[in-house]
Image 1 (cartoon, rainbow, N blue to C red):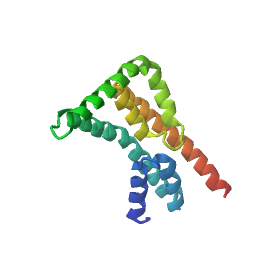
Image 2 (tube, rainbow, N blue to C red):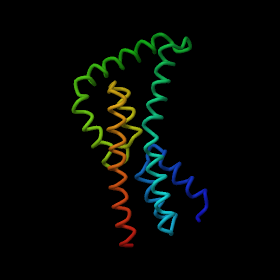
Image 3 (cartoon, one colour):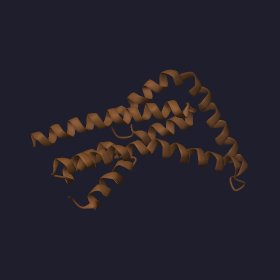
Image 4 (cartoon, rainbow, N blue to C red):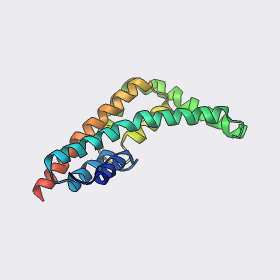
Amino acid sequence: MQSISNYITVFITSLLPVAEVRGSIPLALILFNDFNEKVLAVVLAIVGNLLIAPIALSILNYLDRLIRNSRYIPSTIRRVYIKLLERARREGVKIEREGLIGLTAFVAIPLPATGAWTASLIVFIMGFNKFKSLIAIELGVLIASTIVLIISGFIQHVI
């Protein structure tokens, strides 16, 4: 069995904002030779990426409460923050229904800055329903994982 550090590397890579499954799945296929080890590493990559949205949304909600309630944040900054966020959320209500399908497609396209981190930020800023948005993001992650796995497997087979 390969070194545990290789599995940890794949998992951590799947959590990184730019890499996510776009980087962790190819890395898993490169680092491991045995089929069963590759499967385990790919599963770790996908699971790691699926953890991003719930964690990111929790962190963003915590930071929101901190900014709104902290006496250390200047009142001018707090007012501007709240005003901008409320405006974005008014617009978000108008596009949420169609936006959830778009959100899934956005995450499903395995390009830089189209993953779970960016989608979580969009969900927070626009004030989308968290539960529905999580489903959309996680579905997008699964689709992106499938696309990346197919392309990476094809490239690895050709090379």
